Amino acid sequence: MNDTPGMDPAGEPVIMDDGTAQTPAPVGLSVVAQDQMAAFLARVALFADLPLVYLRRVAALGAEEVYARGSLIFKEGSAGDKLYLILSGSVRISRQVPGMGEEALAILKAGDYFGEMALIDDFPRSADALAHEACRLFVLNKDRVADLLFVDRDLAYDLLWTFVRTLSARLRETNDKMTFLAVSSRF
Image 1: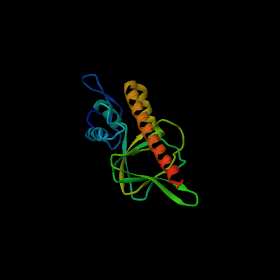
Image 2: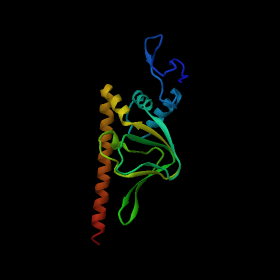
Image 3: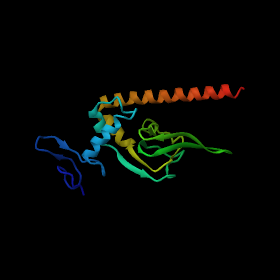
Image 4: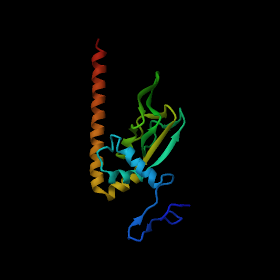
């Protein structure tokens, strides 16, 4: 049952006196929490260039998830349908290397994000994500983000260009690492 002022108990939008439609916040994320989340999103590289009005729209889509240390967030090869932003704690991104075991690719901290590729393609996860420390994550579901981007073309344009820049930077970083490994293995 939704006890938010201006909402009907079923959580459906209510037409307010001024004619605007008020839509309920996602379960567990109040309007105040949405404003706090928008402020957090403004500090995350993926969303930092977006205006506040867009940040509020994105914040309204998500929900928090909590993981204990060592918990599996997702496994390599599983279907990807969420983007994760780290509110607190840390997350280890790794792959299992045959004959060697786990190879940590990155340790991500508060303010970092992962799983963004799931929002733009339908390929399986490319690595495991584990709670390196107990962590709180803000999670954006692919379908909800796609719906928002479909109805708000300006937001879609700005966000997708940010994705392009992010993925380009990660590709350049990978190229630099591969070049370093190729050069260092010759000596």
